[in-house]
Amino acid sequence: MKLELAQVRHVAKLARLSLTPEEETRFTTQLSAVLDAVESLSAVNTEGVPPTTFAIASATNARADEVHDELPVEVALKNAPQREGTSFAIPKVIE
Image 1 (cartoon, rainbow, N blue to C red):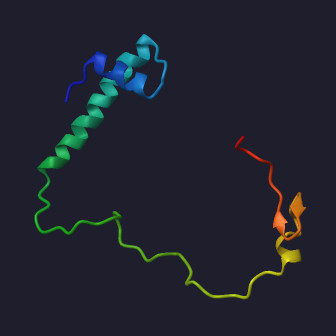
Image 2 (image 1 turned 90 degrees about the vertical axis):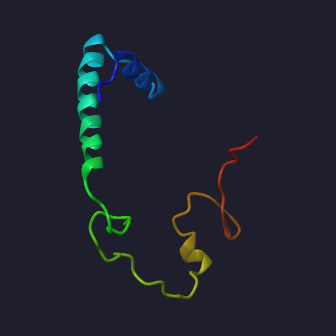
């Protein structure tokens, strides 16, 4: 898919990128090649292939949830820069 220079400029504007004329020319060629590669994937037969969320099957690395006793207030607030009673004290961010 051949991109026009105006399309590259439009995408750069949307991405808030300031490109030199040399970069615009280079990216026109490079982005066209990327779109050609993606377009070639439409020729691949995916009949009977189930949709997946990952390219490779993998087991989750997350540990199982376990219930623990709650932390004592003194332990939880031990490294707090400021505190108010049994809570963290944070600066007001909304006026």
